[in-house]
Amino acid sequence: MGRSFWINLFTNNAWEEFLDSENSVTGFSKRKWRSVQMLSQGDVLLCFNKDKSGFCGALEVVGAPYMDNTPLFKDDFLPCRVQVKLMVQTSIDQIISPVSLQDRLSIFHNMENPNMWTDYFRNSPAEFTSHDGEVVLKAMLSAGERSDVSNDSSSFKTFKTNVGVIAIPPSGINYSLPPSVPMIKTAYLLLQLGEKRGHKIWSNSRYRGRPIEDGEIPKFPSMLATIPDSMEEAAAALATDVCVIWFDQSGAVAAFVIESSGDLLYSVVLLSDLALVNPGIKCYLVCPGDLEEEATRQLNRPSIVGANNINKTLIRMLTFSSVRSVFEDGRVHEKDVLEKVSKILSTLLLK
Image (cartoon, rainbow, N blue to C red):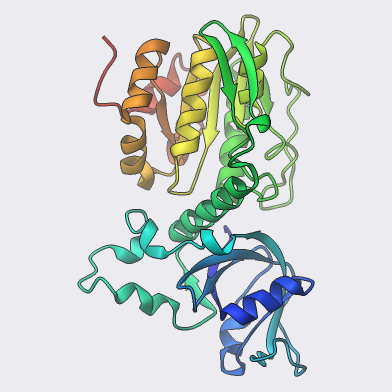
């Protein structure tokens, strides 16, 4: 079972006190003890600043709930507590209003009154859907990273390629945030499939050595320790953010980016860039089936469609269930099986 997301309300003063402390404990009112006991290690608390009406950070639960009758914050007693680790915080000018994400958050679907969204942020801890939680967390991680590198051109790396000199920005992935169990399982299935089909395989540090639910860490005899030197420098720089890559004697033949949140833009741009500097590679966006509409929207951006025509490559969508079906239906060695179980979502096809 994957991690759960919860709302954790803060006043502006309480949030500042939390940041000035060791960032290791958050608390809730006594009447919320039953709800607090439902928090588990690995769950994510989305911090909502009541005074600013927006998300200001995220905390990972790292300990079991407990009671403590000593004051936590100056204006809030909050005896129901849990140990946490700060995952991300936004600056004051980058606090994220739920309204700014309304096109991606399910809480806004079929809402009769445009102000009803505030009902979700009146109590805490209050459980948030996994989909909406991932969208909010991704937005905060992106905001935090932008504040670190937004105007620092020195953080971009430049490379000479077959299409000219290109600049590659810093990673859009937060490696301190572990992937969900379904993402890990899907990555391991893609590694296993590549190995069974005779490829050398590689995965980035976000997936390599990750245990699955039963604590098992699968072993792959064909796993490469590093990206081969034969890969062009620019492609290798981009590849470090790719989840799984298959190689043969000619080089990289397939790349898979796995995403479970509703924010697919970075994944689509990453695959498009990789196809541009590594001609001939097959690129797959791997995500849950309920993200097909968002994947279609991102894959049909004019810049992506234009790049596809230059690359002569279309990014395909694979769902988690379609990857499983290859094994369940005994199609591991079937020719072009991934092309058959994946989808082309672009409405503008190559000429």
